Amino acid sequence: MNTILTVALNTFKETIRNKVLYNILLVAAAALLLSLSFGDLSLFSRAQVMTDFGLATMSLTGLLMAIFIGVGLLGVEIATKTVYGVVGRPVSRDAFIVGKFCGLCATLLLNFILIAAVFFVAIRFLGVTVKAPVVYAVLLLAVEMALIVATSIFFSTFTTPTLAAIFTVGFYIAGHLNDLMNIGAEQQRNPVWRFILVSLNRLLPNLEHFNIRTRVVYDLAVPDLFVAQAAAYGILYTVLLLLLAMVVFSRKDL
Amino acid sequence: MHAIEVANVTKIFRKGFRAVRIPAVVDLSFTVRKGAITGFVGPNGAGKTTTIKMIEGLVHPTKGMLRINGEDAAFPRARGGVAFLSEQPYFYAHLTVSEMLRFTAELIRVPSSQIPKETQRVLETVELSRKTGTKIKELSKGMQQRLNMAQALLGSPHTLVLDEPMSGMDPPGRRLFRDLMELLRQEGRTLFFSSHVLDDIEAICDDVVVLQQGKLTYAGGVRELLDEGFTGTDVVTGEITQECREALGGAGCRFRHDEKRGEWTLFVPKTGDVAALQRILSEKGAFPRRVIPRSMTLEELLYQRKTESVT
Image (cartoon, chains in turn yellow, cyan):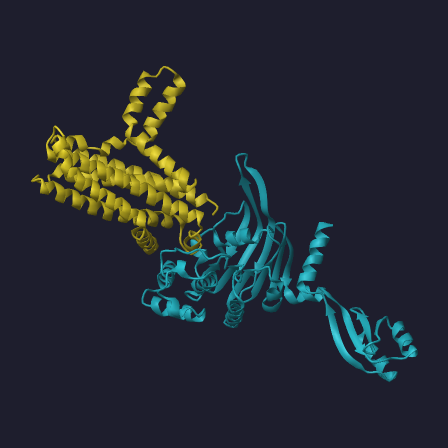
């Protein structure tokens, strides 16, 4: 447990000192503040536009951070061999993977809190009370990002940092198009294509479960049970991907 | 029990799309004695780094078994009390010298109350105590190598495995390192290190393991290996008479005359009797000026072994 904490703390320190992170944060804060003026250009209320734009910004910046930092950290660590200094000690490779994941999630969480703070202040500025569904939306986004971090770690264990980044983006896009894949499979007459689409649909997580933006924007009900189920689904997938990453990494020659 | 035991280890890498088999180490077996300094020698590509990485648990053997202090090297706990030092230092550039050492100390479970004292101790040993707050990326290559050594000394490990530890070091750094090795030997620690500098191996090591194209060609004492290279003795004397030369020739000696110096060098092969030669000389009224044992250096011996294995 101590080893995991040591690796996690070092990872957190490393990511916190990464300049790319501050650039992403700055862009996110600027975009959120700019969105205050977008409401005047829209048919909808400023609060709706702000909420929609804010959540989209958080999703996009979270994705960028998860990919840049996730792939950069493990992939580059393997490529630059700094990993030798950890797994060459009495440290299990599993502890290294879990420590990396925890450190990355801590950084992401801190950034999410910062962006969310700007977001909540901005919507308060428009006179809108922060209701539970908005908080749920942010929470589910955080779960989704943890899943993306686990994905980037998984891909980093067996491929180059560039390919891992491409695969993670592909995974994210495919995950959000999961429902479409199901529809496509039903309409597909070619059995090979149908098999591929069905397999992808079953294999990939449905990332739309974490997207409750539309419901929040239109003030629709978001049942607590749905949020709990979606969060459990995300955590389960994250654990599964981390376990896979551990299996691959334990067999890898460094 | 040996400090390190490598038993019938084979490592085959698979490269490329077609997974071409590249044997790096073939049926390798040797042991490292506890408390001894063992050199690991071989040309580039002989499989030294692969073997060290297998001991370190970074690379998995295709066949065979590696043990550290009797424990399977595949398990992390086997690496407790063992420090590894790679040829090139690999550090987290964002950390300062003291942060890096603290991180390593935590990984090897040095009690947190002892970490500041322990960090200070190893930094003083490698003469880097003034650089505690410096970022690693700002250190020169030689200093990074010293920091690498400091890291390896953390927690006073009983066994140190070092891959080309002196590469990139300036002469004072090399001297410091050799002194350190001597100190570690006196403290009874086990050292296993690879090097291309055979003078270092000859000067420092008790034992040597020699690899050639992934196969073992020698494992044993450095002294024993050097004894193999002992060819005979040169006895240098002043001018000697024809009668004396005939008597010595009968005793199996070979002669070389240096007219300029007025000296004769008498070579007694290793099977010959140097004492008998000295007796003949004194009977004929000549006296030896110098007695020089003639041996092949470690480098010459290894080159000879290499040529033999090729032919």
